[in-house]
Image (cartoon, rainbow, N blue to C red):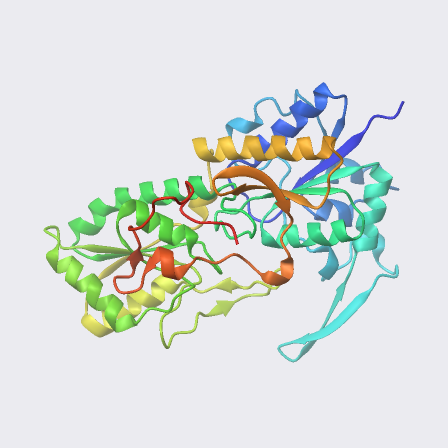
Length: 395
């Protein structure tokens, strides 16, 4: 009798908690005599796997069992590794697919002709060849946008949201967010001693390309000012507020945290480098730009700290491990029930299954009116009664 087989992958940036999902699914499956196949490097496993080449299998897939997942939840990262592969917009064909016929999209970038291939047919063929009946995709809005596409094509798929930006739609929480805030808060509290010793303005940069959840919740926990992508502050006013706070502080310092995608009136964030598979380019440091403006306008010295990658490193905190284990078990329950096109989520503080978000809607954004004090450039602390634990509702 052929055993039932499910696949699991992690895409995009790593965050603490991913291994807890992988372990929970694997352990539950072993009790139901269901085989779990780990797909390595996200969607790349299904675009690059060559089923006719035995050497290709261990590079792209790994059978998961209780033995090789027994301790993985004790550390961060992902044992399956990750990538930002977008199968529907491949900029280069794997060697074994060169010369084969796939849908092509032509375009231009900087006056130079571009060409991308849609390898969805290859993804479907590899899923069929591996005998994977159900797929669990763990990722942010980019990874899950392709999961939604596969669901539309008839692939049975369940999604799990992860990103320290916390900006996946249809859920109030994504795996990795709590640990990111814990890391950022700890780093800022430690660096207070250095910033105050030199009597400067401390500027901290965190991830948040499109949404300011990470910056705002860090500011909420550390009682400092923040600048978020959803609201363009007035630079003169921001600098004046920081200067007033510095002078009023007995230790003569002030702090502000910026989302990487934050802007102010009259300033356009600079980008550089080649776009990734989902069209995102690296962003120049807005913290450096703010430091330059402060120095130029009022002559104050600053200290800049880029907290970005450190926030996704290391072990998960309690909340991320709790949510990751629960999201994984919910996904597995959904598979047992034969469901597809759904995502594990938190809604009004309660665990639930919701539709995989519509990629056309883009990332979820902060509600500025209820969460951001546009006069003080701080989080809003009032009127929280009745809100779910994470102070926001899914959208």
